[in-house]
Length: 121
Image (cartoon, rainbow, N blue to C red; front, side, top):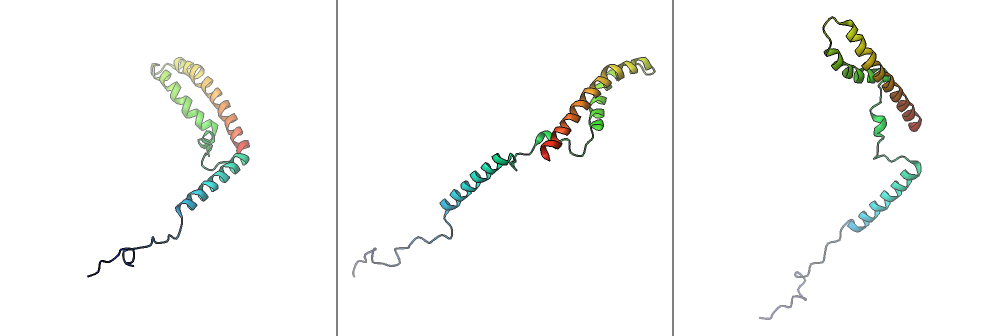
């Protein structure tokens, strides 16, 4: 019997199957698309994957509601130290804890809302 030469045997040589797509091309094209997208985002100052977190918490909220919740919690500790019917103590807590907190909170929240409205429009 003759020895078969593997180079002559058609079954032993299997050509590499052609791919429908080239991985290198896909990676290069996606990198180019990302770079173009990033440059456009830098020029227009709007990158979709970087949301404005400073303005996200303000959506559909009023400054009065935000500050009432925040300052109400802060003055609660003071009011809890008062005796049950001591109106003078409650008034001091309101004047010294709640009002200054509310005023500064309201001013800062209102200015933040205005800043967010002008930056998004």
